[in-house]
Amino acid sequence: MSDALKQSLDLSMFWEYRAILLQGLIFNALVFLCAASVALSVGLGAALLRINRFWPMRWIGTLHVEVFRNAPDYIMLVWVHFVLPLLIGMVIRRRVEFHPFVSAVIALGFVYSGYFAEAFRAGIQAIPQGNLDAGRAFGMSERLILWRITLPQVVRRMLPEALNLFISMFKATTIVSLIAVPDLMYNVSMVIQQEMRPLPLYTGAAITYFLIILLLSSGVRVFSERWRRKILA
Amino acid sequence: MGNWERLVWNQRDVLLAGLSVTVEVCAIAFVAAVVGGLVLCLIRLYVAPLRPLAILLIEFFRDTPIFVQLMWVAYVWPEIFGFPNTFFNAGWLALGLQSSGYLAETFRAGIEAVPRGQRDAAFSAGMSQPQTFTRIVMPQVLLASAPSIVNQFTVIVKSSTLISVITVPDLMSQSQKLVNVWYEPIEILTATAAIYIAFVFLISLTGKLLADRLRRRYGLAAS
Image (cartoon, rainbow over all chains, first blue to last red; front, side, top):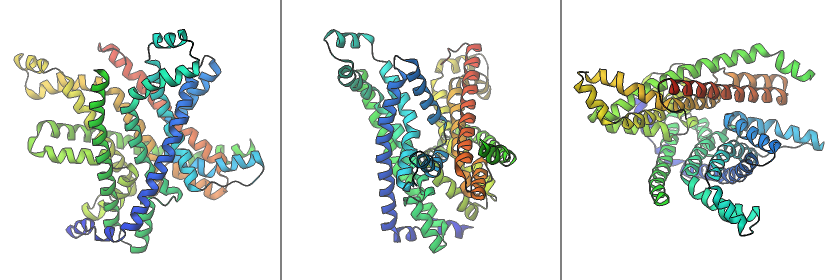
């Protein structure tokens, strides 16, 4: 029993494969960056739909948020990878296939766009009507008001929550290994298949992720505390 | 529509069997998470010598991605601790551990939000420390954190899709089996996604209604 423990904590094998594992980690970061930009832009779009004057638009925005906030990310990943290309293929009458990386970005981006939409909406609705009226009185167009008055304030207000969402998103990027994106977990399982030694490798992966995310999340915690004080002051 | 009937409706027994495993795992994981979260939180607050250990565990459970944690619990723990002995147990254990970290922090915030004066008042009214905790502090904590607890349950259900990876026959894994038999993913996977979305939506809706009702009855404003 203690032998197993010793084996798990013997991370020399993890260290031996550091190059390929680091490569996987870079893939995690890439998936994260692409998915985050999808989530931000789609989320903003959905939030704007939800506060639209016309009810069908609002309805679509609400549907988007409810579907993606309640969807498990793994089933969305599988759905985007195996079903969406078939559906697109049926429409354009040609065989379509997604690269796993593309599927991962679309799936994670859309799942998290639901959460970002709610953050954007809360921020937009917190802006006093007077600000918008003042902008209109100056003759600003609605689009200009959105970019110059609304969004800067929204971004400042939602920043702490957005950073927390980014951390959850980074954690979620681990599941992309399941559709064979060569991320850290994928490479770990490849090495395990070769070496037949799951103990040190899974432990090493868990410790690596733990340290990275602990660092990120404590940074975010300190930053948010200061940011809130600065904004409220 | 014929496809839907053939691939989804006629296979409903397979899918329902999966759904019942999902419900079972999530329910056990949820109970484990609440109990574990409470224990971790109490150790962190009141058992000074074990505090660093509790903090380390809470942070580890919260900051490790659920998929990594699941693989770790499923493949490494049996060798070290001799437990969990089945993948079913590994599934609920990993889900429960992750959520217990989050719930521990929720409970801690709730406990620290109860004004000190109330505890002093309970002491001076002759209540013992455990009595004060169970009758004065805990009811308020549970009321205040009810929405977060429900939210954590939805997180468990969403993460539970991953236990299909370690071959627990949950809804996700049953639907993937069907896909592998019929090679027609469109209807099966769409239906599975819809079931999950409806299930999670239903949980958060009933949870919100229940929490609002409790809070109104016991004099806290609805959120």
